[in-house]
Image (tube, rainbow, N blue to C red; front, side, top):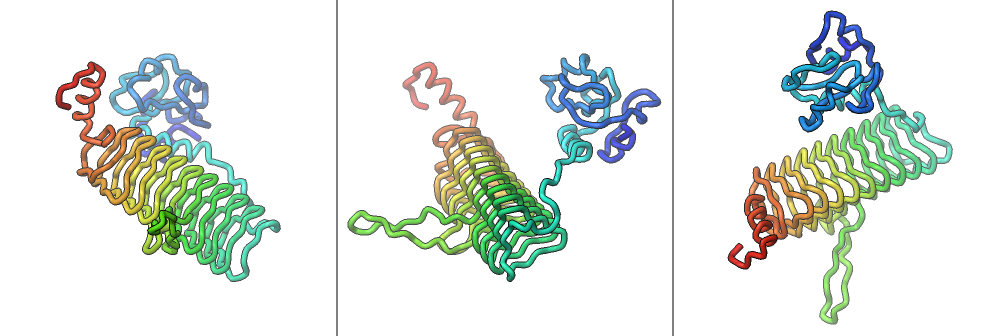
Length: 328
């Protein structure tokens, strides 16, 4: 693709010689590894020293980059533009052919939209609905009465349990389990545990990504809900009855206990734990390995066990290192 056409597609401005728009671009590569025909990018100022040595044919950068040995595609959001360039120049292959593979098992009462791709050893239960252009990789299971929207991708060994509702353009990575039974038990007088049937549902709204081997549990009653645009990393556990807002980011190995609420735009770092029945306010950020044990106000950054405003946690950390026994 010509650099000029690529710039137009990405909404960028070409900064270079008069013939820069005619440069051929075939793929995206890192600053250090890029060569002729490659588009590279500068999204972190700490790597600016590598720009002078790059062999790339063009670079994505904002206006803080003064010069480069190749044409610059100017954009205020080089990271987002880079993602779009990768999707355009290096699209992922579609390994599942359109149609239903002869080794798949689709219940005759299930409904399949136009252009669905269903791979070998997929099982689709009674009354399930699969939206148009959705792709089910091998060994996916969609339970009875489940609904999967349009243009979704369910990778190998994904399990979508009965009556789960999945929106449009949702991606479920390998081994994700949506709608498993929540961890609900009532303790009897003799100390044994009575299982509480988990008969609620899980609703995942549009444009959600769920990482590999992550689990979203159904509640005893009501629903567990994941808001539109939320992105969930690998090995994340979301317990029964949790409500997660829109555009939330959950890094790897986050665990959220039952009936907690994460409002829109919350960010939880890796291995953050959230106890049950707490609320994390809109736009709050929690640093990795912290534990949320109380409601958190929105728009602030937190860290520690228990999670507190990060400035306070830093003071605690300094005093712990010094062995200060004074009041924290």
